[in-house]
Image 1 (tube, rainbow, N blue to C red):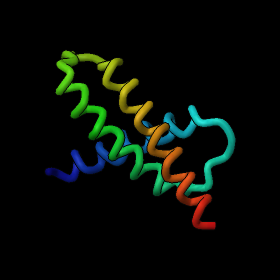
Image 2 (image 1 turned 90 degrees about the vertical axis):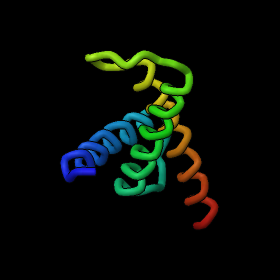
Image 3 (image 1 turned 60 degrees about the vertical axis):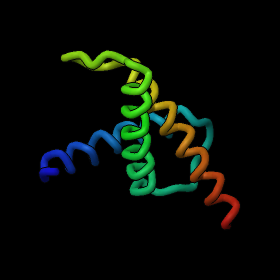
Image 4 (image 1 turned 180 degrees about the vertical axis):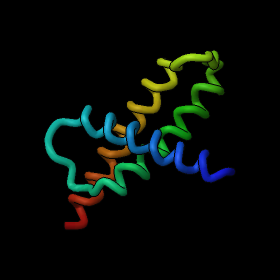
Length: 88
């Protein structure tokens, strides 16, 4: 892993996490760092699922993979937010 790939994962995770968070109604009681972490995890899991399902990798944007990642991020943000609510 290079510094560029780590920074790329953080940026992609932030975008995926933010998009997933936007899909959920209302306010989520989690911070932006946790949102980025959820986004990174969702991006990794979404990519793995897309590869297992045989979604073709293209030179452009892989829309099916992106949708999987955002949906997983929304589920992840929802789960983390519900755990935060139950702690408070």
